[in-house]
Image (cartoon, rainbow, N blue to C red):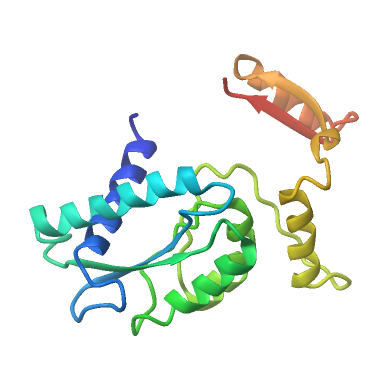
Length: 197
């Protein structure tokens, strides 16, 4: 893993390590606070338990080995979302108040929770880490509300709505240029998927 993947893992690990060294109940004075919207139970609990344990271990390592980042130790609070959008928003609302300036950043590691926070986080001036999430297009609407979009995303998450028919063309990575040509031509192209593997 080179490049952005390595940097992301190091950033996440740093935040996690700092968090593990501090009490989980609140930010300690003089620390950089990281809100962790984790999931150790629920449909993706096995993945979340491994990821968030490693993240917190790394934050602890950065605090213990390096004295933090540039001398500033990390603190954190983990809130269990169960990979559930509603609980994810509740956790976000909880962790954003645990330090005077809110968390440095939040990495939901959940597409549904990320979509639920797209409007909230910028208004709260809290960065969302969403690397690798692919295309996200958000359009305003005078007819539909945030609850309508949340309900629609929930239906997709529960696999009650099949979005695959929206993908009209698929190309291997080697034919990426052709994929963009089809997309730009607008000839019967709704969504064009470039398959990496």
